[in-house]
Length: 453
Image 1 (tube, helix red, strand yellow):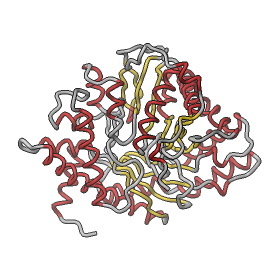
Image 2: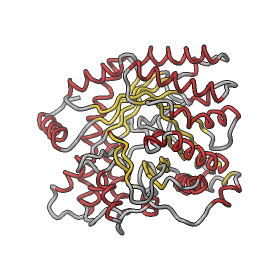
Image 3: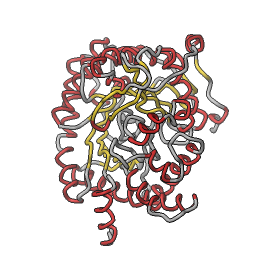
Image 4: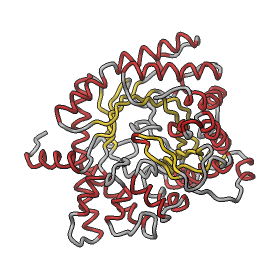
């Protein structure tokens, strides 16, 4: 790939002043060949496979970071959903698997490991129910393990029994990590239409259709897009869209270059570049700031959903033009605690849970890193999940909920997680009950657009 000196100077500027980075290099590892009926041997098999495949991941990523001068913030691993390869194990066995994953992650020096997961969008097997029952203790007793549960797809509808169960699971996870403001819930996400090649946590897992070992890369870049828009002189919205497209093109090219170099050095396949705009708590490195640069006084006011739709579409168009291997989630993330502009919008009163839900109809993921009062009921959490799953199901897109019922906290208080997880202002929920709806259970049927065969 021929790179012009002007592009090199632009990249240096982006890194130094606009918070450009590779958010994650994630190695996906197939664990299906680790299956064994004895839990002790199963644990040994998965530990050995992870260490064998990823022992050089961190050092290689660091070498490539130095080569190109582009920061790689996180080195991660995703594995085959554990529920899909687990045998007739007990809850305690699954907790031991989580500990094995955590030990392997620590040994190879990565930041997070995803895949303590279950896909239950059409029903739950006994194995999947047992794994889900183990999630609270698994996340409370590990540092690096992340968990996800897919409860809905456009093709199958919404498994409301699983939605009800996940509300209770989230509450229990929060209680077991209460001394750290419920941080276990920051490592747990509930999905509709979960992708098999997502490099971002907490939802990453290695899909059944993936190679034995693969490198997927997630880029960042809100600060770069924000700076590019603010440099324009009285632009109309079409000009803003064009600028976002061109900027996303540059970011994507850079991300794929890094990902291909890492995969070549490790001798594994290159998978996808996930071109999501993933914000950080750094001022300016914010999706909310981009929306405000388009002309909104504060993120969350009327017009926010339209501005976010423009941003998301332009990012996808620019990225698709730059790479033939775009995958994962790809678009704009709106995690409240990880975005300084979103936090400010909540604090000034322009952004609430209802508006965030509306925004998720056009963004990449969903209600992400939302803190709610600790006394929020499990049925209310399940109802929030159900709403978000419906948006994903009907719109044929990935949606997700990563919500933290912060123990002991009330609306207006602050939850501190630190690092990329940031700071979450506690947001209010409806006082009216959804319990009877959630208790009904069953499955919300797939929409008519599912009949595409």
